[in-house]
Length: 304
Ligand SMILES: [Zn+2]
Image (cartoon, rainbow, N blue to C red; front, side, top):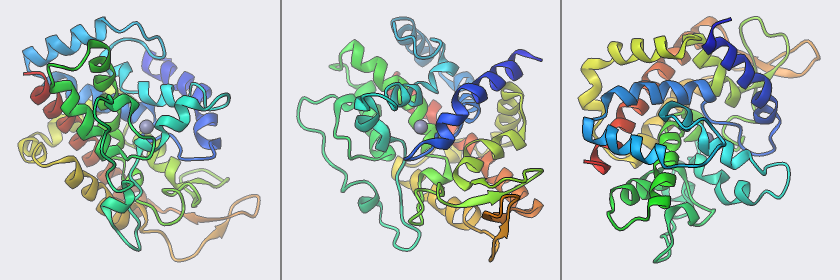
């Protein structure tokens, strides 16, 4: 078993039950998706931005993940889940920051983002209101990372949150909701599975695994495939990126069969056919590329 596979199997064993059984949102892109986004962004950093990022990472004593750039893309999920089954302090303070539930039936960005609450003066973004959304947090942490008055400790947090939230913003089911907790209440069957699983989890992990299990190879392939669109995709603002993710959810993720079939326990689920899988994979490829390209832009702008 290769290193990547071993790590993947390990991550699945450790974290999949937590993600799938959670009462609230599941995990966003699984670890593989986030790590691919990190691997896309890293080679696109300017030498100046890369040096400043490396210095911040080197100064961070946190041990929830390994300290390198790619591993830190999963830190915000680890932080959120670190007291999820105990005191829930970190969990309650940050869990809403991972998504923006734009309603399919009544899409309204401000509604989905708790009315875009302003950060109280003097409050660092890492201590901002719990009722906030992923695109707001991407904006706040970008501003903070660029601000010379930000403390070193807060700058490290801003970097780690950006490494993760830029990814979450591009998971279609983290930007859309159909009164089903972003697809967490929708059950599907796909591939060789005989037991229904959640549509949200399909988009977090199964669709990424379908692209490939070697995260470095996937990152390189996606970067090259969409290389000629990079400059175009790096334009825009987090609110527009959220709308794009929403459109992908509406047009692809929620384009489900009209009726369900029973799984092997008799639970009704939507059977996703190969056409759905192929469209989902194409969409996920683009969303991973966009997330990686845009993460690089954010860091290059914030750390010139
Ligand atoms: Zn997340």
